[in-house]
Amino acid sequence: MGFTHQSFKNFEPNQELKKFSKNLIQQLEMKAPSDSFLDMGVESGKGLFKVSLKVVSEVGVFLTESLSTCPLEALNKANFDMCEKINQWKKTRFLKAS
Image 1 (tube, one colour):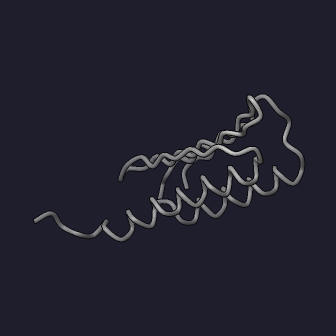
Image 2 (cartoon, rainbow, N blue to C red):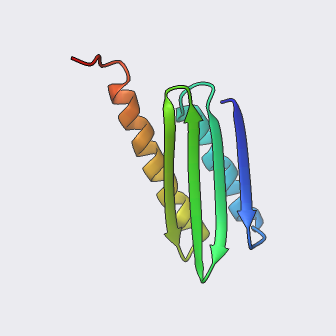
């Protein structure tokens, strides 16, 4: 992984959330294309937590967002979606266009 950026906006994360998000980032770094840039943002507002994940690499940009009243649930949803996108790319990356 090339570079990782993580931010929390409009709230101060507790230790559990910090540890959970750090582990999630480490898992994504292992799955993402080599030399990728990972950006994770967690924002609180209007009773909801919005998680934005972005992986930028030479092969493309992977984006996902999720909303939940629980920051851990929002992170899980975004992580699941991002893993699905990366896995889909892995399945098709060596296929040649006809």
